Length: 100
Image (cartoon, rainbow, N blue to C red; front, side):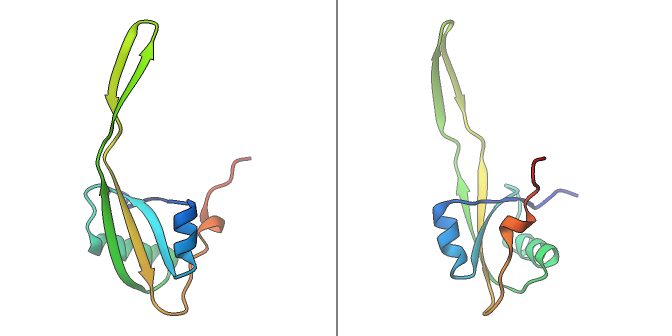
């Protein structure tokens, strides 16, 4: 079985959204809203009000090296903005693995 939730996204914008009980996750590209809802509810033990998804297309990248130009692309990504029901929160920072 594939892992639907890859990691939480911690940026300025996502931190501002967390004040409104909305959290941003990077999810599997093939995951749908129902699977994302079930994954968040089972992992964090919360009630999800809504899920919005964003597909991020790959961007072309070019780098000049001694041997010439190297061309490539970034990967397809998918983000999910999860809204929780009134009065519920998720401790995203406490859930992250720490480096020792």
